[in-house]
Image 1: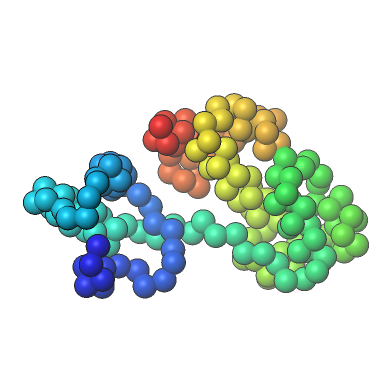
Image 2: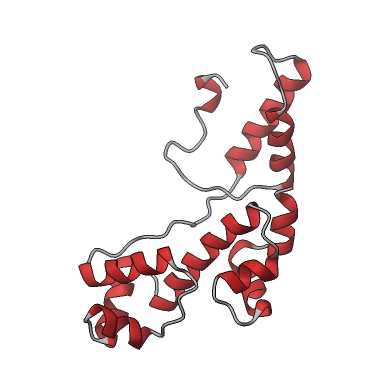
Length: 170
């Protein structure tokens, strides 16, 4: 794309919701070879740009806490999202009072401890599903005892079931 064609695109790095049209158009464009675009390719490029311009931003980031004790917990959860310790057990492990952990996690990340932990698991789920891991296996790998709860959370956050997401990756 020419730089001038991208002038109206977001100026900073961000995650966008991808429509079915945008996904299919990008898939088609990824198969193109050569340097010059023919007329249909130019038109499809315009559609891609229009879709990107109109796509809403999606908050997928995962802010890390600054407090050393909370950061220790966050890193451990990032390394092992399936870890089943309760908040009180994490607090004891990190040497922080449970109420302090709760208050500081919200203050430093904008998420409750539970929400942050769910976000870690969901981001890992995206990777597992994109790699072809079945939904049930991904849920169990991430520490969910109830696959239905995993599916409901995934749908609530991403607007699509994990099965549909997995299918869209093929």
